[in-house]
Length: 405
Ligand SMILES: *Cc1c(COP(=O)(O)O)cnc(C)c1O
Image (tube, rainbow, N blue to C red):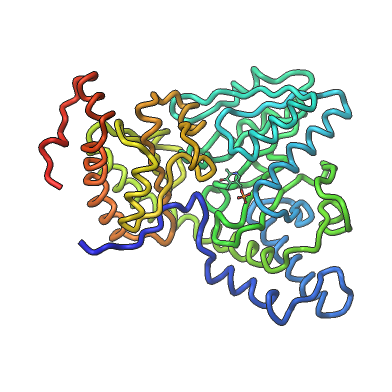
């Protein structure tokens, strides 16, 4: 069998598209002016920033371009929204925040930071399928709740949360609602107005723009305090000379992603379903998180008696880039907090594999993974004393013994 290179980690990052690169290139070369300069070289940059702001606003259904603030990525947007809302809340004596236990660490660790500074945080548990409900949020709401932050789609298991329901609840109760939509933008239909979203975080490198650029949507009537103080860029709310090339790339990439979303999702979903069906034929395997209401490209599976890191390294030898838990969790021996939140038994949580397909993946690549994965899993199990013990303890038939490698 011929070795291939298959990139199946699109939730970790994506390749910069030709569209995004073409949009960025002039601002890395001849058009290098500072957008704050009044001469024409600078104004060319300022125009590109404005165009990207308009395009980003349009992609999200925002009322106006001025509701988009460019940031240094998704983590900064999350930090800004949450710390800013906390500051606004504290000024009114409201120091309670509601979130979930399976957020990205950019949200969880920001909330943990605020807990050290006098805020109370309620972490809603997700169910075994990977969802929270508006009813859970409603039960947790208090007089002093200043912010609800619930991710749009989970980065590990791809489950899509009932954002419009939570948005309308928060709007009716006068509580700010933020969503980390880093995994959702460009993959799910989003309309911040119809869904009553007050603040939304997104990141360029998850949708074919470069790393280090992101945006925060912040509804026009919210006067969010600054996270980064300095010059008057981003209407005085986020200081620092604009990343013009990154911003131009983000505007182009988000427009392209939203424009080709329906077509891409149809194709990617078909690939995903085929791959899930074939993976679940491997004995003692399971899909983590609901199969419906899930990002089109997300596959998260577990194999009992297999160690996730070994699986990743072996897949890499076969040219397949994938992930186990989340990229930030790699290097740690704990099972991911998301899989724990689903209540996954350790035997499954340790042997997890995330394959995230994107618009560049092909049928041939799915065939390749389908062919090598069962063999790799069997091989790892054949070498694992843990698998042997498991078979005996649970009366599992040790199919590996019948295989030839
Ligand atoms: C990647 C990711 C982030 C962080 O975005 P960066 O641009 O890498 O800082 C935040 N939230 C989610 C859900 C993500 O997937």
